[in-house]
Image 1: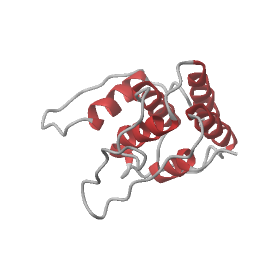
Image 2: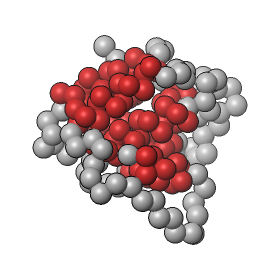
Image 3: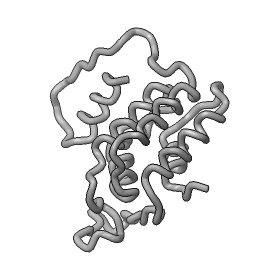
Image 4: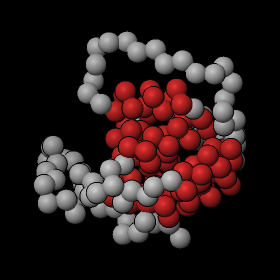
Length: 152
């Protein structure tokens, strides 16, 4: 999972022409969505970024996964981990609430974060993943919908 997290960090920055090789263990750390959910929920014990910062980091770190047809539980857990760790504690850029935010193109829509805590998003996502059928394909859009929806 740490190798996948490293890959996501590299891919979230400026595009590079270099080739990176990130090695990890041959077997999954999180073989099921439930195992990934346990790893994700454990993040809530760590520092808490703002909800806006977490959602912005999640979108930035996961952007390279948008064309993947299926995301393994290890990848899902790594994405949540790296987004949580790289979310800045202050207000996030790229949200309507940020006065300096300017969309790069006219077609880009700024998505306002839910007005609650990042930890609530994390716990909600872990609960939904724990109940997810392990034979169902998880895609990037599923995860994006999961974290941007208001937790209940």
